Image (cartoon, rainbow, N blue to C red):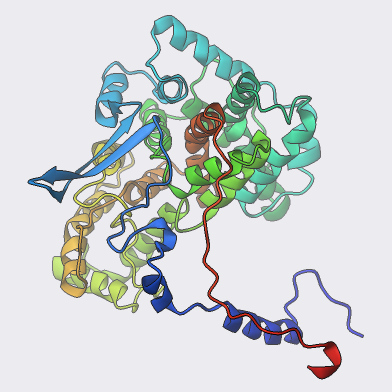
Length: 455
């Protein structure tokens, strides 16, 4: 008898998978018949109200004369407009990560002393990663997927925590602050290990620098020479702030609430949220944007010819170009319609970086596609709420200009979103709610049991 390999799909599995797929199919009409909000959204894409939060708010519509009308998108962190927050720390040339993390966790903007103390706490926790952890865990089993490496590291940290199962607020806050601080180390060290053991690259393990901000430390531990420009660090810091939180209804934050409601430990919750974020429909979208533009640059000869660009965009929608998905990646969002405020904020900084990196032509191509894509989509499909560039549209281009490897695009998202997850976990625990248990309606028929010999 042939010995099975761990990841082998045998003829038996292929045969059984067809049966499995057939029995798993549900008639789409039944969702309408029973008024099931598939994906927890109604027919217009509006999310079903499943909870309350005081952490962040998204606005994409206004009520005028009793009717909902699309409006330019707005994002609020603890009631503060994200544009005002970004304007505040960028004008005064501060790195915003620690300041905005403090706001999301504690509900108020810190004064100078509180901010300095919080930065010190984060810097101190960066040094809490056990020295043996990198050698024994990260180096021993490197993976080609950094999100899986990150999730495995988070779960393993459970064994290093003497109070791992304590879900009191003080202990959970301690755990969250530690994870916020060391996520960059776990991700970048995992990438360096993979590059060394699988691709034969030199191995660099730089210790974090307590005098540097989170964004500066990411560039410091990632680059062999630890060098970076001020503009590079400030734009990465901005990216972290913009990705830090986005309402309780996004998939990974909702996952945080669901898993936390069961009463489990912080490490299990964050690993589950990482699994959610890893999905290409959530955290992996900016990778698709970068790859789409790489394909576009190869197939559009004149980047200033709008007719040629339109034809390529039509080919995307017709499933004749790139990955044949029928999507223009980075255009459109589940909530925003007329504009995504995060993309608007990002755009001016992206332009500055494109000048520093001598990639102005690529930025101009991005601007042209951003303008033409909604028009091309409207030619082919009914748009009930409008479409616009989302934050992933520009973040991928930023990471590419920063020389960040594709493998770290989604982990960088996680380095930011861990702050939002932490706030949502504490909010769920503080309100002592019931376990989240939505209802599913069974549509199968009851059948009589048939003994084995009569089947």
